[in-house]
Image (cartoon, rainbow, N blue to C red):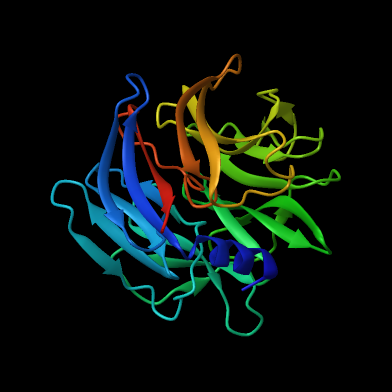
Length: 293
């Protein structure tokens, strides 16, 4: 576990977690379940039946209809963080697991039904955020020579392709559903802001310009809307996304333009690190937190 991950874990260990959904059009929030420990980063399955989340290094499925929770067998990968993504056909789960040899995060793929993980990224740290719609490539944030940039790699592993190289932190890369863009967040202008680019790294374009630090853009399945989390400009350093902060979830058209706040909550790290749109494009899942007395 690296220093940043350890700091975030220690800050969150005395938190209750509240698994929620919200209709992005009406603003109605629904509490699904409260936990007396930390859970993070729900993914919504394509059939609309389950949420996949991480907790204490393990992966779990939550059935929305019944509230039933089942641990997903991830073999030796039992130190998973909140950067995990489902394959487009939902048969596989890619996770970011802190390996035993050096505690760095590396990306593995495991059957969603459970099984032994297969290593994708030889180098670490690597933090997964996106899976291409054709199922062939993964997009991730990685530190190489002390610099965090965005990379892609074939699902079979091999040579990684670096897409960004400007000074500052680039993070949170996620493919649009049509595969035409990779959305990401970057501190290259000073504050953390939302950007997108072509899958080959060309046409890097700022999509929102706000007096806030904006993280983790997630594109709706129909490609029309993007939700992201925003920290107050003076609440955090531009390159940091800690837990236990007052934050906002904001919505913006995928074509760019003016965003709107759709929720205010106590959260941050773990709230919405990965895409959690429902398949009908209407609802998002996220985690808010409450400190224990």
